[in-house]
Image (tube, rainbow, N blue to C red; front, side):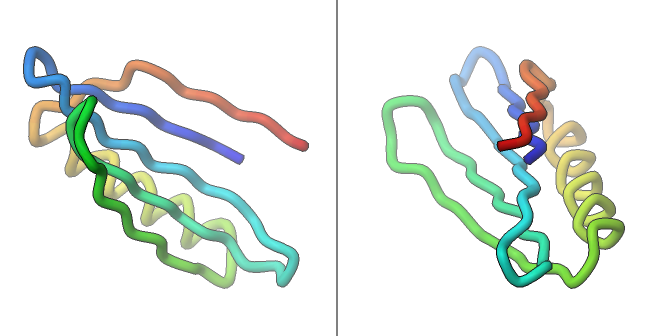
Length: 79
């Protein structure tokens, strides 16, 4: 799993992009956004291969950076 967490100061807004795999050999890109202390929005997209999932996640990360978000955390874990 790969998680990118971006924040936009001083509004306490966040944008999270996460890539994970499932039991069916597909990859999921989960996006969450909102402000700390408020209800967050989310969207999940499924991809048949890792390359497409990484490309999509990087595109969404780039759009968030263009809107003023800055990367604050990058986490990779394998369980």
